[in-house]
Length: 393
Ligand code: HEM
Image 1 (cartoon, rainbow, N blue to C red):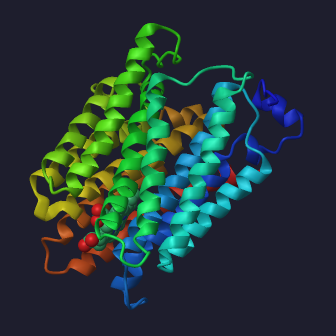
Image 2 (image 1 turned 120 degrees about the vertical axis):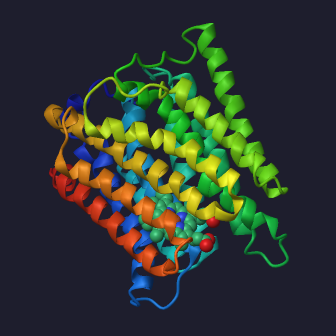
């Protein structure tokens, strides 16, 4: 495989900016998917649509919105770390197509097609990453925490196979439930702890982790991350078997330890920049949401939105802000408080509050509509601020 010593050099070779910096395409695309998934509640609450599907909303949010942000990040970061070639045009098109198909099929309640496309997302990412990390041309190895990235893919692949299998006649009822747990929580719990092990120290100004294999200590760390991934996977099987409190609590502990010690999130970021604080807050929202869902199983889904809106969603936008501001060379914004980023953070936290209280109110669907509208406005502020800069040639 050809090496790419420096992005500017790659640009000099005539490789397009979209391939060198795939996040420019996949972050804005992810925002559009999020609007489809979250907007579902706004259109229902305002009477524009007559039906709703919790499963469509959940799958679009996780399989398309979050996955598009993850793809944008990984397709950009892996070639830089390994100093290998950026994704090919075919890989970029295939990834965008798989994300679009999984989202449209989920909205159309074509679960089998949606899962097939989601399966393809992992296959594209897997061949892309394996060829670069295993290739002889690879410049640097990933850090130990990245052991959780293939484990995240295993959650996604097994989950997709189970949700698709549930479509087959006479398949056992547990396949869909367990598959949904693996997809909606497993993939991004592993990815946030795994990728967080690199990005959180980088963002907060603490020393970044060493390369895997650089010392015996890193091998022990990799084994510990592998054990964390296995514990997360096992917790879903326990939950499916009826452990509705201990299993999510186990996940909360594993994630808190992983992000707290592995990602240095036990202390607030040492650098200024509002997006760094938002990412730090989001890191703690993840175990908090899991713990509250464990303590109050009757309030499970609203409690899980602390994880979905305050954790995964806020972290995706916070990390995307960091990647964008650094690549677009906006150091003042990266250490300051751009209004759009403050609006995004405030809107997400307000939407979380409205979503959390919806189930305890007498106006459930109105709450959902308002939460959805506020969340969309917050993400629109982000897109208006960074979108034109990302899409500029
Ligand atoms: C901001 C506005 C949002 C609203 C109003 C909202 C509303 C809802 C509702 C009503 C449900 C179904 C509840 C039930 O099964 O009875 C749900 C489930 C779900 N939502 Fe959201 N949501 C929002 C944002 C998000 C975001 C940003 C994400 C992901 C990043 C997300 C991910 C999920 C998932 C994965 C489920 C399935 C949970 C489960 O059953 O295990 N939601 N949401």
